[in-house]
Length: 213
Image 1 (tube, one colour):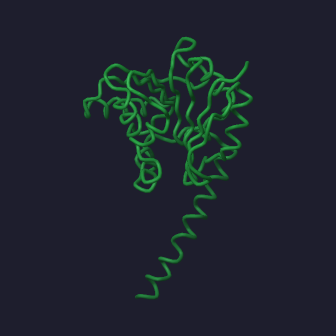
Image 2: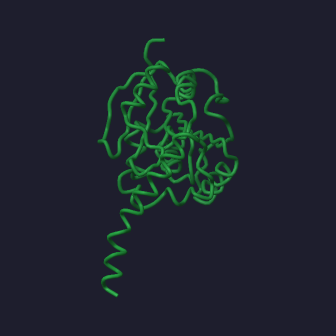
Image 3: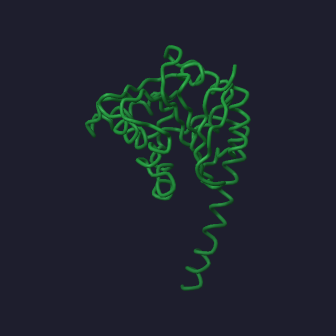
C-alpha cells in the first residue's frame, strides 16, 4: 500500500508536467479563449499565492479615481480587486469575447456589491472606447490566448492615455505563458515600450508605456 502511495506521489509531478506540455503544444498552434467552465480551475490557490488579487492591482499601478480596462477577466476575482482599488471615483471596464464570462463577472460583481464595473462583450482588436480613454489597461494570463497580440496591443495603445500604462502579468503555470522578452517584442511592434518588469521568469508583471508612433 505504502509503495503504491509513494509511487503515485512520485508520478504526479511527471503527469502534471506532461499534461502541461501537451496543452502548451496544442495551444501554440490553436489559439482560443479559455472556456468559461474552466474559469474557476485556472483561479487556484497556487496562482493566487504568486499573483494575489489585491497586490496585483497595486502592482499594475491602479490608483483611486482611475479609469481602468481589464481584458479577459476570467471569473472576476482580479476584476473585483481592481474595481475596489479604483474606488467610487474610478471605474473598471472589462471586456471578453466570451459572453458567458461577462455574465459570470456581472453576477459576481452584483453578489459582492461592487457597482463601478462596466462589463461588455468585445474583441481586443476593436475596443468600443474612444481614443486616450484609459489610465491603465491590464491583462492577467491572457496575452498568449490572443491570436494576434500585436494587433491587440496596437488597439490598447489607441485607447490608452499618453500618460497611461499597459500591465501584462503572466505565470509559468499558464499553458499560454509567453516570456517577458516575447511580450516586449510584441509591444515594440505596437508602439509600446517597457517601463519596468516586476518578478522573475516564473511569474512577472511587465509595465508598458506609449512609445513614439
